Length: 141
Image 1 (cartoon, rainbow, N blue to C red):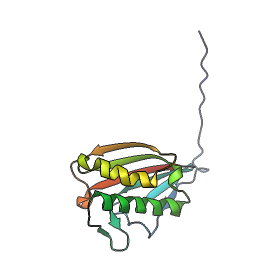
Image 2 (image 1 turned 60 degrees about the vertical axis):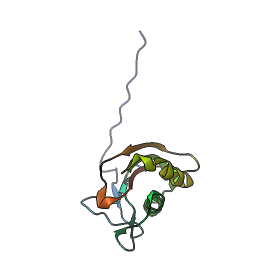
Image 3 (image 1 turned 90 degrees about the vertical axis):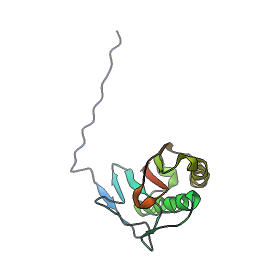
Image 4 (image 1 turned 180 degrees about the horizontal axis):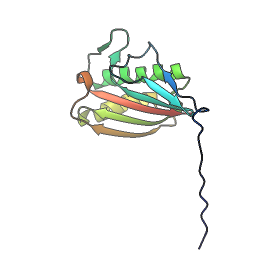
């Protein structure tokens, strides 16, 4: 029987810095959460919907318009934290209507044209403010 080695790592929380990311170039949180949190060189971006950060209102338009705004919001948060789309390792896309998947995917591919992250996409019953799409993002360095 082959002996297995088990490796464990202990993290000293005093040495681990949790950093809250906030930028005016993306919509302010509409609830008790942060735009993003970075810890251990991993950035967790809260689900973004198509809110225009200048007006605080949901952009009007179809899934293409809303997906573009969502990805601009994600890009602003990534840049504020010192990351970019190449650093994204996982996206979760929530769609109010799965029939919008192809159009959403066409826009998404313009932002993730190289080293695409892992991804899941789901149809959900409703999204905040009547949005057509919400995208949650994880990036790492």
